[in-house]
Image 1 (cartoon, one colour):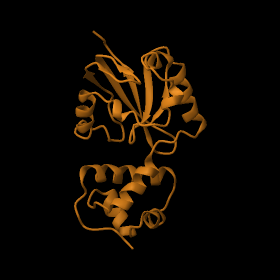
Image 2 (cartoon, rainbow, N blue to C red):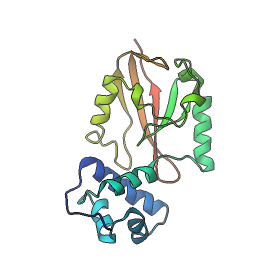
Image 3 (cartoon, helix red, strand yellow):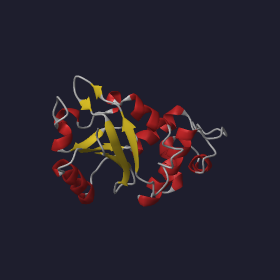
Image 4 (cartoon, rainbow, N blue to C red):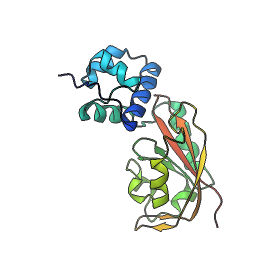
Length: 192
């Protein structure tokens, strides 16, 4: 059963549509093949990629799963190694799901659990109110553009049983992984 309707794409659906197109081109997947996997017609996927369609929840869920960062290539593993070996407080998460991919020892020093305990789990539940507000405005900042600019946000201090988020600046950089998915590098900036 096809689930494509002519509803204008909602912001998240439009972003996923553009990301799907990029992923499909990088991985040399034909539009018809991906459309079938997502339960859409080829024209439905085309309209989604162009931001003119919001597909059903099944297709949205499949797209989110497909676009979740899975660092698998040698260059992706090298990036994880660089993050884990960094001297500064830094961590790398899946840009879509906020799943932890890697963290430096300086970042883990503020945590009450090991990196291994959190790796593969979403860090979203630890987000400060400022991080949540920033996330809501990412699209307006051009974060999902092919070459997004790095930007800085200021967050307040938040303590959780598992970790501490220090007051101060956090710099976000969006990085493309080899499979076309994206990761977010979070580095500390100025601290009071």
